[in-house]
Picture 1 (tube, rainbow, N blue to C red):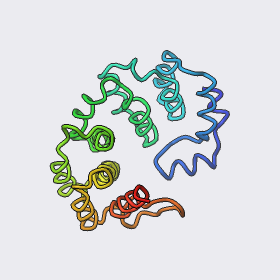
Picture 2 (cartoon, rainbow, N blue to C red):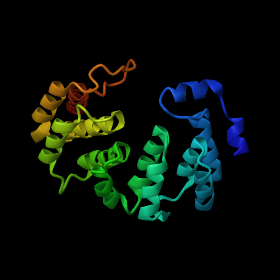
Picture 3 (cartoon, rainbow, N blue to C red):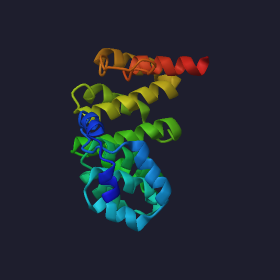
Length: 213
């Protein structure tokens, strides 16, 4: 914790706080610490329990994903207060857990929109890598009916799922594009030069173009 405190940079914190993350540690330096520590499950538990955002990010990097029980991961997600901790927990731990599919189903329709966003993020992953048994037309129905008015983080995850359906499944591409055009979700999202807009019609079209190229 002392080492993490020594890496605190007010300029980094200022940038992070604009995105809802309350820490000032450069992520490259955080990853360097994790590389040095290697996997240490017990230390990961202790770091997580501090509640400190930088410590929790480090915990995620040094933990053993398959060591967590289902209920542990459920509790961890619900107390992951900041977007970066939430995103890393889902991407680096839950996706590698043996409980991933069970948690995806449990979180997908959770009344807490932040928890539900994790379910949608995991569903987007399955749309790309393991679409068997997914009802893609039904997913599009829900997106069409609910994405426009969904809270920010849930909306982002639903939009990600919409884009992945359009990119990966040609038979549903026209409908995915039409939904994106009609709802206009993230149409005006600021995008850095050289990056692809998260607006689903642009995202889908660009990724399909690259594959054909």
